[in-house]
Length: 276
Image 1 (cartoon, rainbow, N blue to C red):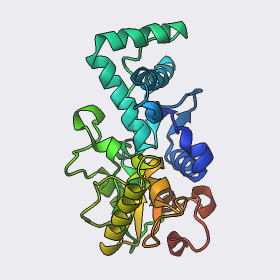
Image 2: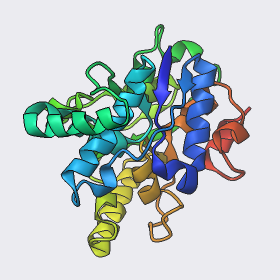
Image 3: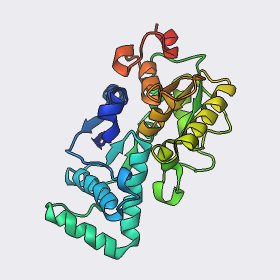
């Protein structure tokens, strides 16, 4: 399996552990990642300029299509914006023509075939499943899964999972040997989109979510999005100290037998007790 890897802008500077763990997991599972010279997905400017946001996204898809590959991203916000851009261009002929003209100026064709796939979807579609590659089952670990808004909604655009009753994250957690727990707020927003606009509401949302995950009895909250991890993880200095937030790529990497260093586990982390 081979994909054009789109890490997004945030990973390299703010969350390199995310990129490192995703790449290590893909290597262990035999998923080859090629790295075209992508630009931003367009998500940060979606409210400033529709054309700039859509063009940024479609240019990335054009680069992936140019090498005959689907695009894979570990970020739910990037995933959502890439899907939104394709949908918007498909619904607006004038917008689509503007995008074609801009792409032609760079010698690129409008992307018609390249799909956008999230990291979780790639894992869920693996032949034989992830469970067949697990060598260090995480028995006894209880996990609260946080889905992330931009992959789930709108369903007719993202095509990720059932927006009201998704199961992909729980299936993948169960494949590691850990136990995914039901909790009331698993589908609610993390609050990150409000950063820089209304800090108070952003802080209230993350506090409510983490309290809910903690009260479910989980040992940790699992994320699969760069933005969500920046909101829930130790990178957010304002987050309440209720429950640790861990990227799923880190959890899965440990279950696959990767070393703590390969997936960014530090001494004292909750996952260290599963390293044998």
